[in-house]
Length: 199
Image (cartoon, one colour):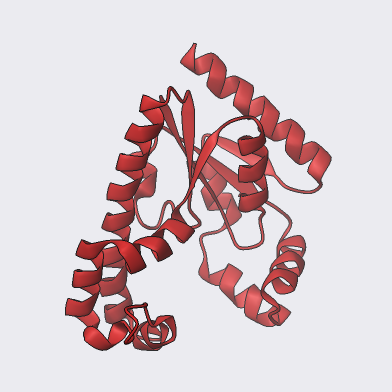
């Protein structure tokens, strides 16, 4: 079973690309949603977060206080590194378990979706990488509409991320997301390539 990483900057359309792969029967692991689930449900990760940030990081109902956690790490590189140092390995372990389950189901290949695939070293956990790119103005408009955020905020987020050019240089496949028709064609082409490599 081939493990594929899928990445791209804010507003590039990673989730849409994953949905198209899922329509072809490919199982996709959303690292962002799994990280949120693990912070709430994984006993080892919960214990680690309490050790780092104190018991108040979970409220009286046992739910993660995301606003408090965000305030803890905002503008504090050391606290943010501590959070990532706990969460990223937990996600990595969960991905490994998830892959074994998919292997048992006979999956030909699986996809790990992560905006920070290269930044957190998840590219080392996959065999190939797909990056999704799009014109910057398109990305800004999409993300601003999705997040209900000012365009200058989105523009700053994009500047803080790895560039499309650098992601494309490090990836095995690049998908350019301009419209749904060409997007679907590119996904189907990569799907065939990956299936042929397995055969």
